[in-house]
Image 1: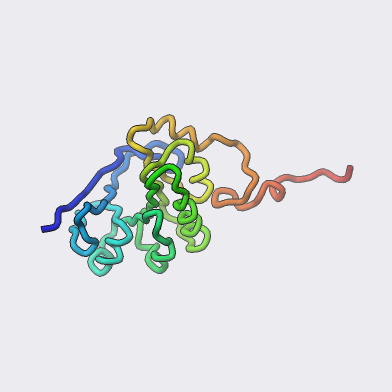
Image 2 (image 1 turned 45 degrees about the vertical axis):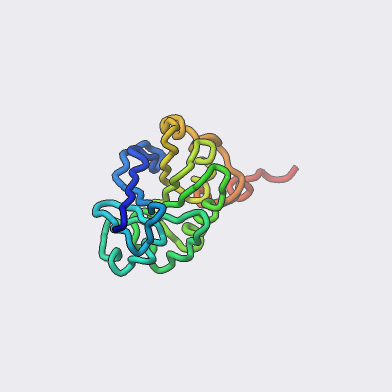
Length: 181
C-alpha cells in the first residue's frame, strides 16, 4: 500500500506584497512513492509535475489544483496545460540553486502564464526582490524565517536598470533626457 505524504509547509505566505493565509497544501512524494501510485487528497493541492503527468486523466477534472516544478524540470512540460492551474509553484531545493529563476522567466515571458507563480522551498529574504523581477508574485518563505522580515526583501531596491517581468522597459527607455550639452 502506498503511503501518502502531505506536508503543509506554510500557514502564511507573501502574495502580491502582502502577508496572507495560505489555504493550499504542497503535496510531496515520499521516498518510496511513485507518481502513479499516490492518492492526491481533495481540496486545494499543489502537486509535483511528475504526479500531474502520471495522473493527468484523473486530475484534470479538478478545479482547485496547482502544480509545482522541481529545479531540474522544464516549464515547457506544462505547455497546453497552464490555464488549468490556479497556482504554479517552483521549488528552490537550496539557496544557491538559481534554476528556478529561469523556470519562472520561461513561464511568464515565453509561455504567457498569468496566474499565481509561487516560490517554495529554501526561499529567503535576500532572494525575493530578484524572484519578483522574474515573475514570482507569491512566496512561501522558509519556515525558520520571520515572514514579516522577509516581506521587506521585496522593496530592497527602489530603482531597477534592466527590463524584466516586473518592468518591461530598461532604465534608459524610462527616463526622459534633456536636450543637448
